[in-house]
Length: 254
Image 1 (cartoon, rainbow, N blue to C red):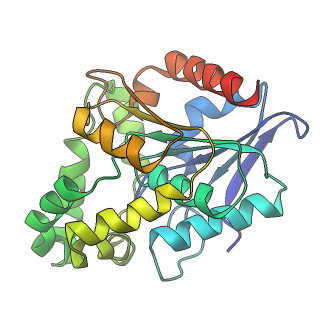
Image 2: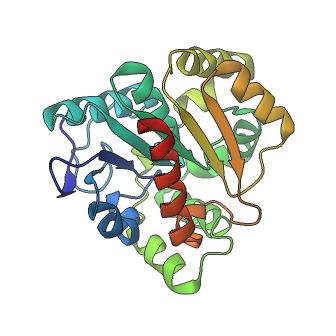
């Protein structure tokens, strides 16, 4: 699927692809798109079932990543820095395992999913319940993740979210239905296929055990933590995030 997108910047400049989190759209990246476009060709996409892209089952990481790879190929983004937040972090990881890219930046998406599975199982009945109960649960979950975002930016992100029950349940189906060992094996296989530089940037510290696990699964991975920046470190401190991307890109591209 060719995804709905925003394509801006110089066509002959280094390429950056931006992928949003669940229930959001490429609009979540808007404060960063214009500054990135000054020196890059920027492709910001809406995942299937999100934003202006088509709704088409299945909603799973492989399908999301395949769409990103297909869209990148359509615009000849074959040497891009793939940057994804939350769900988008998992998607760009899978995309890097499938198709060509220069490097990956995963923003605050831990890929060892045991704790996430426990959290989801505790709210599964509400997620599968009435539409009103589903929406209330989703909004409560995301409100708790706003962290140190200022009120204006938190309100902007909240206004972008469009929780769709079929999309959310489809996205999280594997987490609901797979054991922790099965999830670890699937993610490990995906990470093992990533050979480009990989920056895992977290606003909440995933811990030393996670660092050891990720780097054992992906030889090119580096874990970096910005303490007390919460789930949206790229929006909490936008200048710092742009500087970090520039430094990482300089390392990657030489």
